[in-house]
Image (cartoon, rainbow, N blue to C red; front, side, top):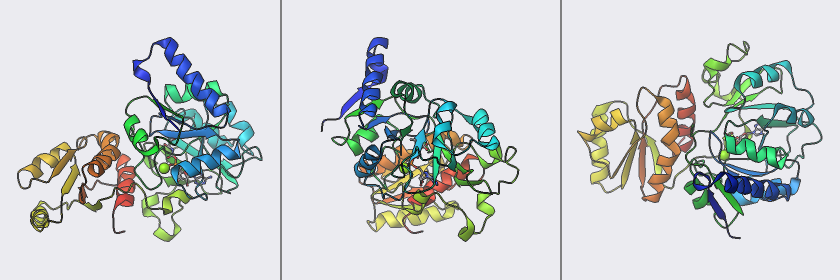
Length: 344
Ligand code: TXA
Ligand code: MG
């Protein structure tokens, strides 16, 4: 199959309209479309069609017990998909939708179990991206979409990442440029007695806590009791090279020079501009990738997955990533970095 890769920013309004209609018709016909969201790219299919869900699992090489997130463009689309829209769900949707928050509720019979990996619950999100919202509107369907990467690889945050992973496997890629957030949405489980964050993201614990007084801080819970989204048990975001944390203590950076001297490289470092500057005085790694700045962790999230993919593209065998403090958005950053580590 040939993958049509459409750069949306080069189109006239009329051509844009045609491209979005083409995407909508493909979705209505049970085909898959890769599309931009504000977090990462999604690999979309009709959430109500079990055959489309199976295609998504096959294209990604994803374990079938790992459920998909269902995307909507209007809150009314949620009603038929769940048993009840609880007051807390409505409150959080009012506050954070469209946006990088996914909420889990008990599913209705309308949602096929192929979409939810056999679970009795469904994950729901309204993305804050004009292309995603327009496409879902035009298809007039809830759209199941995991991140548009091969299973295990870093999520895709640019059109060329998607093309690299999925070319020849899907009919259409809508390229809307670099994703703004760069990390996947925060997932909150509202289906049980105790609301819980299953995956940290751009909407932080600190932002959710005032609206959900019973929410407990994931980092403070014993590891064994920490609830997990089924997908989080799999190794993730893994480049081909071995990933390690860059020591916080600068005196240990000298050891990296030894590692290079022993020929264990090529060695890459992914760090903020400030850390890169300090490192540069002591060490010249084969690849030094500055991602964002210390004072702005959002700028680090925006570039992190792209940096991991660059390390692969340049055949780095060792990748050292800066460690961040796990509060606010730092919790999401460290969650993804830890999942990429080689020994954990
Ligand atoms: O930002 C995002 O959320 C992106 C964009 C495309 O919207 N999507 C995304 O999907 O990251 P995916 O499939 O890569 O990650 C979905 C995660 C998985 O860890 C999965 O296990 C979890 O959500 N999940 C989905 N449905 C669930 C459910 N019913 N109960 C618990 N976890 C669920
Ligand atoms: Mg994913």
